[in-house]
Image (tube, rainbow, N blue to C red; front, side, top):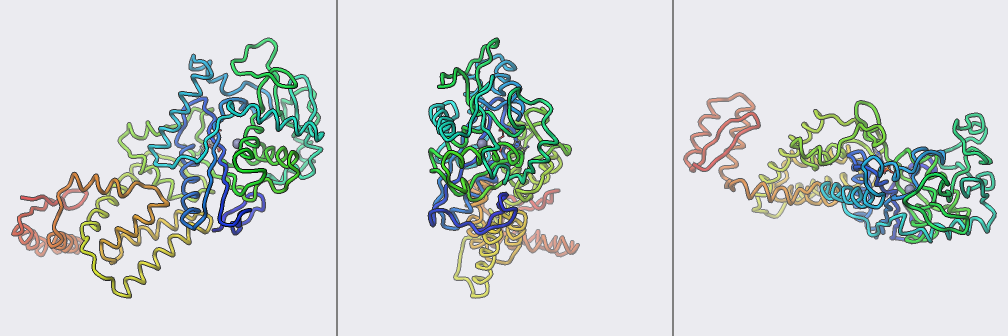
Length: 471
Ligand code: AMP
Ligand code: ZN
């Protein structure tokens, strides 16, 4: 298995710390608003990654957090806590907000047929672990306290910015506009923030430094290390996390444990865009899975759209695009049902067996090469059009679907329960008639219609192809 590692900016062979076992941590959602299909793209591709790793023989422990405190509107440790802001917007308590939007997130994840992590952990359930980590950093001399909180001194950590290839000189020159007063360097970041004196915060905890709440980055270090150990194999997130969130996670984790690297492989997903802009909660240009469904599209059509783009490339969402993948998904289910009904599987000829094996190897090696889903999907469509006998075609595509998660077995079964079973002899005549029609041989097409009728079936020509019904 090979993956692009942001740390080395190159494709690397995945060799976990413990042979055959992978610890994977995924940055989870901040539950202050509705999870949108941009989030779904990220978690769908995490899911494909995990399923591919498992298919390749690795045992994977997947941990994902839920951010329910401490993520500020600005990355510069200033501005409101997104959760407290969301609570005001929706007229709810922060706790109610977190509960409702977490539930909405899981509902969307389930609709997308994305597997749940082995451990899902909330920041507010791990305050003690975060305080303990800040104490370790304090004992090792990496922190300082100023008016508004406890800060990490990035100048004390020599490898700071390796992940994002930050250049310290450039950073000095481009010092952020709004810098917290007393911060020693522009890159220093909050580990613990004090509750503001004048403003009432709904979420706050006692700490050795005073009442307050954790900085955003510390939760991911504290929880990933709690569940996966002081260093682990894969960490995922969106590309927006490279310069600050993940850069800071590395600094504080390695400073605390003295172990390098904290994470072996950093996997970063590109964004889902809409009209060329990042789909985001703060820009308000987002659609949820519910929006997709209410417009008559299946979450599986959305997933099929995601598969068509490599996870490190941008993808622009349009309603035309989803309409096209919806049609493709429906045709896929119908043709898989046809293949399935040719279940009179015989022993495959050597040539066909070889073909099946070639397709299988090609498909999985494309995924094992940094998750090349678009190319793997070309193989998928090639299989569908190939002359492999139906039953074997069906089984091979179902094997592909163990990593894609397009709910094909379930949807083919649902399709079959709604449609009559067409005997293979009739199906053959229908296919011959399709070939005749494609060749504009309408006389032959009519003869075949009569022949089909002799078996007691009728064909009707519609925009989406021939509809076959029992007379
Ligand atoms: P957030 O809830 O904003 O903390 O985001 C949770 C995860 O979803 C992060 O890894 C983000 O990078 C990712 N994400 C947010 N918006 C998008 C988007 N439009 N496309 C892809 N991933 C996104
Ligand atoms: Zn994180």
